[in-house]
Image (cartoon, rainbow, N blue to C red; front, side, top):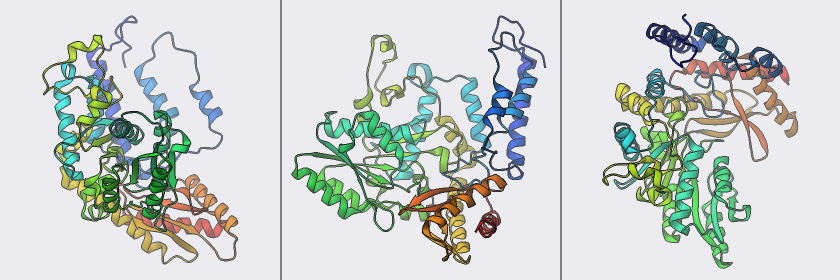
Length: 477
């Protein structure tokens, strides 16, 4: 392939661009087409020295043939990733993307869209407004609700908590207290730390027997804090926990928060997409009553990284919280109908993340997404049914919101020995390359999680994965 047209320009000739683009598209198509036949994970032990040898080099003074650079990328970089979009990647929360959205990201980068202000991106701004309105409708929030795209659940939660602090406390955190269960995602802890809340202002309450926020414990904690002069202001509820898929009781929580004048935030980075299908809507009853919520389309809405979203019941509160107008941005201010998304969140410079979700909704239709989400529910139920027939395997939480947790627990072994064995089983499966699962800890026991949300995953792959786990268990025990 030709080198850059001049050593003094950052450009390629037209035909060189076209040739390089075809090579990249071919790489992507091959990836999607051969993914089920590839190992799920790369070897993780002892690879640093080898990768340093392959990739560590001085800053290149002169350019290299693009074809050679792509070859190195394929050989030394992309061959050393875990495929979170693989149909047998069941660890953590997978990200089963789709090719249409991948092309949307390419278009966004190619056109270098700045999506912070209307004056520079009015078309993208309207697309983002449309996408957020679609999500608002799916979640049952009122017409006055709105939001924006961010990088992921961590930023969505941070944004929502900042709005809650502004709306309920006028940014005065003196004596303020926030409440959530011990199953809540660490992004909430991190967000509160960034916002300046001290550990003594956080009530991390023990979850109930179903790993949900305990209403009785919440009532008692709020009552006790009010009695000592503290200022309860916010409750964070889980719209599907990462550990077990448990959903906090939103109807009861909404009643309680309304009576106590508390902000109710739903961390639904993973689970909110469940509203697309009947089973998910039933589990998430009451979600339409929250004050804010987070969701990650790069999880159960099948988008490539990064795209998270935050929705607020009264969208005006986003602007009240974040709008700052320095003199160098005066030119961005136009009529009220113009929307500057930089005024609604933390980022001034922001990419056109909404395009990929808009494009894939338009091309596939929401019915295809609905079926894909429902498929995840079915696969988790298949896993649960299979596990109940396997001796020495114990369910630690049932299939819910497409997550099931379980544990290999032969009666003759101690609890500590079982913990170590379950970790070793998962490590052996990862090294084998057929599938990847992850562990967590529930009630002081190490358990295995399986999260089969990839629409390309088959029931047979779930069956085979569990039986391979069983074979490793018997080999190791």
